Image (cartoon, rainbow, N blue to C red; front, side, top):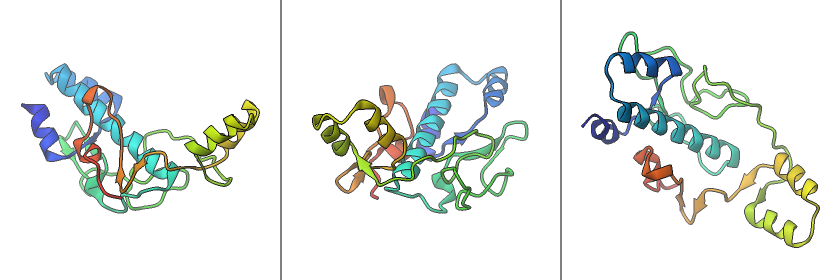
Length: 169
């Protein structure tokens, strides 16, 4: 029942590791904690894909991002819990990424490449080291787009339905 209500709300919560421990002590069942964690991981993964490929943006839509949470005060939401607003640009980080989440620098700076480009390089016998170098220094394109819809596979059918429903770009 709890998972269904969270799923229907379309909300993902940006919970920290310590928050899960507190919720467990408070009696939240493991399946609920697992769902909350998987939905958060899925949304961060999709935000990173949007950011890395430049194929889509959620803009300043605060409810589109995982919501900051203060488990001790039982509060959540931008403007309620201290957090950088999702529409505010943070160098080297996808929009909406929680301030507390470590994030590597954004390395791509070369010409964009696609999976088809990588396949062609392989067919053309480009050395593996050169292919890897191009991948590491180029933004990827056409990675998650299928026609006019974005696609994000969720492991074992878990994840945020808000993002997996094939939102238009």
